[in-house]
Length: 51
Image (cartoon, rainbow, N blue to C red; front, side, top):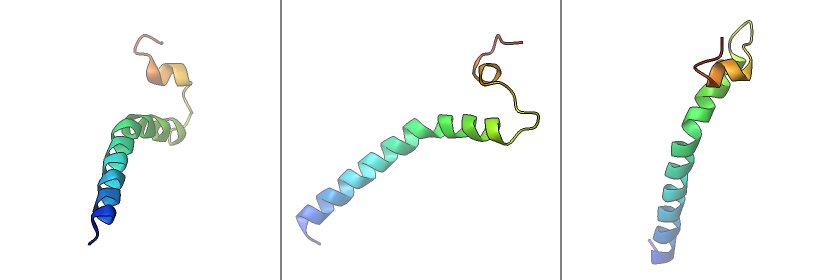
């Protein structure tokens, strides 16, 4: 395997790990928001003090 190809794969893996790390919690919030009925308001999902 070429050194340039290995560097590209390493950069791709680094980027994908960061994207998964940053996007996991928003994905869970989105799924919880869209999969429930009746749909709660966004403030009730993110705020622990909302009644």
